[in-house]
Image (tube, rainbow, N blue to C red; front, top):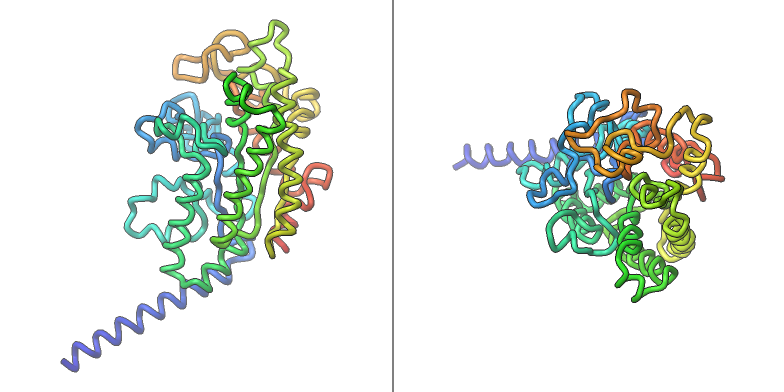
Length: 369
């Protein structure tokens, strides 16, 4: 009995030693690592493979020619020729790309895999719970936030409530979402009959605010929140016009939402103690690139790189599609998504950009506060 008791005591001492060492490691990360973790929520602009794990989803990028410029030269589930904004943001802060949550969900030791962040983003996801949720084709924001609460619980069990709060308070929470809600409004007459554009974008911002508050309640303090781009300029929208020009009405709804989002974030800062955020003016940065591509090193800002037909946007990027030989020449990779080169410009600007495009602070400043 004495030997069994000694063995038990040794196990307890070893457990606490491991826990102490792990906590110490978390709270004194290397200089190259600017934050302990990055948590990503959103849509296909930052999906790194979650939709690969949705059997019924048709919103996938796990086939060629996606990933042609990724380091592995293989499709990964990113809607891109290579890396997307989630990858570049992780690189900026000295971390590996946060893994897709659905790839870790069944892992028995998943808590240890959550320590540097998780990606919950899903292609076709929206702020609202649309038809994609019922069809299990995407993970809407509400479900992504629920997944995050389970991650919080796992981390709290492993590290303790105090340590996990310190970890999360210094981590980044990037939320890239809303474009699909505007596309829905643009394409559904029943929504347009039910809501004016202003009512609809107000509801988008109110719904997002509720989810941000839940994240806050579960430890999030530093948010990276890009606005929507001029989505009326996507190749899939341009081809609906005889002149192939941007659809100004669709883009105006995105711009309208951005104004409401900025007001909501400013108000939220006054409501929640310790919250900090960086808003990125995706709309004007992207519009500058589209209207003056050569200044940014691009040759083509209307047509997609991968696809078929008019502006290579009548058939999306699928294995039978052709793709441009120099992807860095193009602003758009497929019918709606930017190329890797544009994603890098976005992240470079949101990280170190001037107050003209990133406010009330850029991400480098957000990291340091």
